[in-house]
Image (cartoon, rainbow, N blue to C red):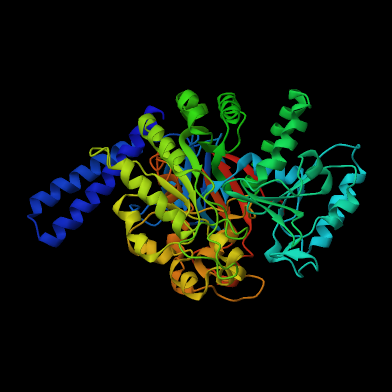
Length: 602
């Protein structure tokens, strides 16, 4: 930050403090002489603020502004930006004093301006790959998925693998005639892809579907046992139908990785960089200015760092390192990177998991599934392994972020956190996170606050999963513990919002809509509305709340002088428009570091 910006920020803060002093004195009926001195101090601040005026690079005016900063003491409709930072915020007439011949000026025409959305939990390279590869998020049936995959096979050479993602058996219009727990048999897919192995990721990422060629490459037969923490889904005759849940995915993915090793590194890198470009493009189009990546490899972290330092990242990234405890112990200190490329890349967190996803029967529950009697889900990572990683996070002073969806999984993670965090009686602000925290036993909700744990949840998961949650959990568990935002907020638990892209559409607008309405768009039904957020709470959870969840609240997340000029302009006010109009909201501008990265064509 330049000296001028530091000064402007200090003056802004001092002006607010003097306002507070004057207001307090008025209430206390203090002597006039004191008030005169306070007024004199205010005059001095105003004088120096005016004399230190700088020329802005960009001025945005005539806007309805939600700053995200609760300390803002005045109404504002304009913002001045300089050197990638917020220079000042105020009324248009005042802000125009920063204008010079070189200043770009944009009339926002009364539209809604707010801090840029921060994606609080997603998979950045995975999002890009989902665009490059087959994407089935909107596919209504298994038949359509098999047909799309068959068409792809015709364009490839014999032996080339086909990959895709996004299928979800609970969201199809019809159930395949041959199925196990709603999962189809592989026959239809295999018939159209005889010469090409196929691996298609479930929307959740917690199971894969393989065709006969892929299972043959992986050596799958009727005698292969289920691995610990996973399941090979079989028919009544014991034959694999093509679905591999949780840890069983490794059986197919090992064969796929063997195929990838036969490709040149140049070809693999080229596709990775193409995926990153696609991910940036779609995020920026959706008004997302920062992205918290829930699991990057050391190789990816190194690449992100180089991109940031070379000024080649258009979006700010914050990443969690994802490796086993042995690899983390050896290398994670080298992967701890803070504010590379002037705040465009940070890795100061570690990711792990303890269970899978509810849609794939992988969520680890205290009591069995209602629609799968006797089955309580999967513990996917050994608890002692998770404890080892927690110790590494403590030693490296990094945040720890653990995936937990089921109520048992969340309880186990809270137990681990309580034990490890208790070792340090001094630092109580580590901001460890539980990623998803979707299904909680009500007795565990207060423990989040007691241990300063952040609930990193994704609003869109609520309405996306709602059609099958009651079927899986029963009414009471769904009502009181599923996506329990209001219960958590009432205890003062910070909530970080997001989409888990590419598990869901990366649209922040859709996730915001789910957070404040809990309505299922396709049916209009509301999923236990007593747990919804207010609009202010949901906006906070997608901006300053997510910045707080990454120790970045002093740098971004609100439109405050001195902070990063990351701003989005929308054509509707998310504070005032009707519920129905939220989903019609369009991004008009996305501004990152003071630069216009997206402008909707008219």
